[in-house]
Image (cartoon, rainbow, N blue to C red; front, top):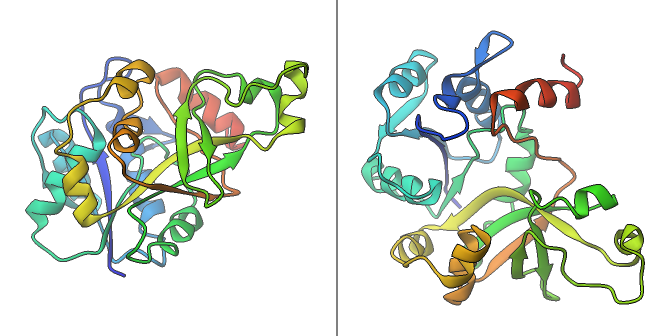
Length: 247
């Protein structure tokens, strides 16, 4: 399978304008993401997709191939699709690499690419919730699965509800999983989901993947051992460095 890795990088952000250019121990976030991504042994090609010329010039400066996209995309998924079409090359899957996870492990990418078999429509990753604090954190998206490890639902709430069990023990009684936000899309499916209108559940939970589920697309969830450390605000940089024991 030919898999294109795309790193969406937009300049505008309510909480962190210019986030891709933010320096982390002397190197930009985008450069760190790119350097981790190209260490993958499974990706066929890696590009950066951005709507901003400052980001484009910066990415070219450290050797990345860049595709300039429109600025009005509602999500990274839409930006990935435009970049893929502009590249005008044939791939079986497009892998959306989160541009705000500078310490992404390339083995995490490889484990996702390994299950891109041409049959699965959309593939993402999950990690087990091992504490009450993580399970009940509304910032962590939880996944309800069927027997084939396909997503039935994504929610910021804790599902299923365990009746007559203290909440602090829920994660000990049932295997709960939280979402790790990389996606691989089969290219024909990527085109179709980008044409869908926002859905009711998507608006309620502010989760675009619910639009895909509501429209009948299957999302396969693969368990990973690699945790995800996302940077949403300037304050998160120090927090992630502490978590990675780099500060």
